[in-house]
Amino acid sequence: MFDQFLKRPSDIARHENGPYAAERRRYLAFLNQEGRSRQSLGIIVSLLYSIAEWLPVSSGPLTPAQVCVAAEQWDRTRPSSITSNCRHNRKTWFIYHATSWLRFLGQLDERVAPQPYDDEIHEFLAYLRTEKGQAEATLVGTRRGVRLFLSWLSRQTKSLSDVSPKDITAYFSSEVAGRWSRVTVSNHVQYLRAFFRYAHRRRWSSAGIAESIDAPRLYAYEDYPRGPSWPDVHKLLESVTGSTPVQIRTRAALLLFAVYGFRCGEVRGLRLDDIDWEKEQIHIRRPKQRKVQTYPLTAEVGNALLVYLEKVRPQSSYREVFLTLRQPYRPVSPGGFGTQVTKHEKKIGLTLPQYGPHALRHACATHLIAEGFTLKEVGDHLGHVSEAATRMYAKVDLVGLRQVADLDLSRVTDWIHLCEQSETPFASRGDLPALREVASMGLGGLL
Image 1 (cartoon, rainbow, N blue to C red):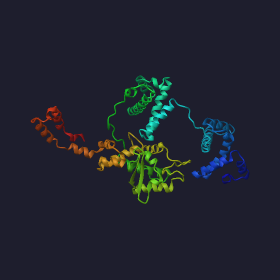
Image 2: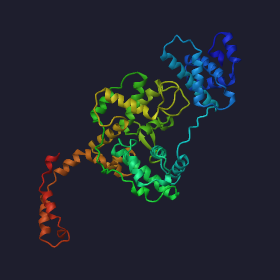
Image 3: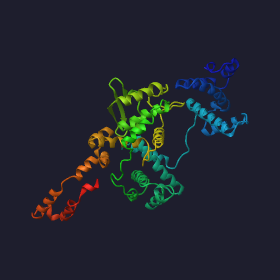
Image 4: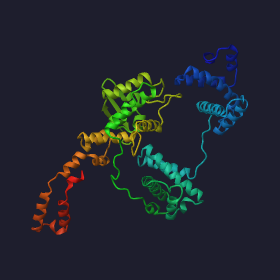
């Protein structure tokens, strides 16, 4: 293995006889299988030798802190004539590959320091996962919200059994939560309500805590769908028609967001086996609904994916379609697409209340509504289980709203007059004056 990257026989012999040679060979073979370039592996070979000299791998699992100390000591032995920025990069490179090598060998101790109420949080999340069937993405938010409160509680030197409604009020009024939006506060209220219901069942806390937590009022469908107009979507797609690897990958992802309205996590999870080229279909996994949905593969989307797969996607053992373009090659991170999409939206001058891939999902739904599709059809396209999730898009159905405005309400007036002269149960309810006022309104000017 060493002779593939070293030329001088003395260097090859030094590496073959150096510390942990077998372990270093295994790691280099792993990196080579990952698709690292020959130039990168040539640099890593020498660095790995220094890592093996400075880290006592055989003494047992090492902590990240020990790796950082070794990197600092190793850097002091290097020439000091280079700039501080280069020294920082050199140590960072040492720490990165030392950590990766130890993790590969199973010799990295990545245990984090115990956090307050770790056992209670773990048990609560296991209950939500097994009994409530909540998705992992939901559990991540719940874990973060509950841990934030319990960490704050620990700093107040109070136990969970002593929590009172006043403590909950103090928490949401503290610096921890004082700058949250109404939606964020509402989400954290839901996390804590669920936790304290379970805590009461397990006798960790007193009764009534969950019921005492007030949430800010959120109105159903109060938000307008926050997406760019369809002409702006076309403008966005035209801005990424270049031949660079980043533009080719970004265009393929943008088409999936805009044409199909896929969520960011669904595009990240798309695998090579999910694209059926023979039947011209694409299968998308819906983590929220725990199902797989099939869509026809349009020519434009198919061509964009084909160009990406043939010219850009690196060779890798990963089966995900979208991988990073820099080594080590791995699936795109959760924030990767968000950063790229937001960057291109701002680059072409779009001013939006919400940027990122989810805004394109809203744009897709809004475009389908404008084309005359029903809410049920739009909901099926977006993968919604309930029609209630699609009702917010009724606000953008201007064609339907104009039809409502054009209704002839004179018939309503005649019907009210008929009710006034009859003894119908409806006439006795006292709602006729209000109806008469509504009937006299001219709705045409509202749209």
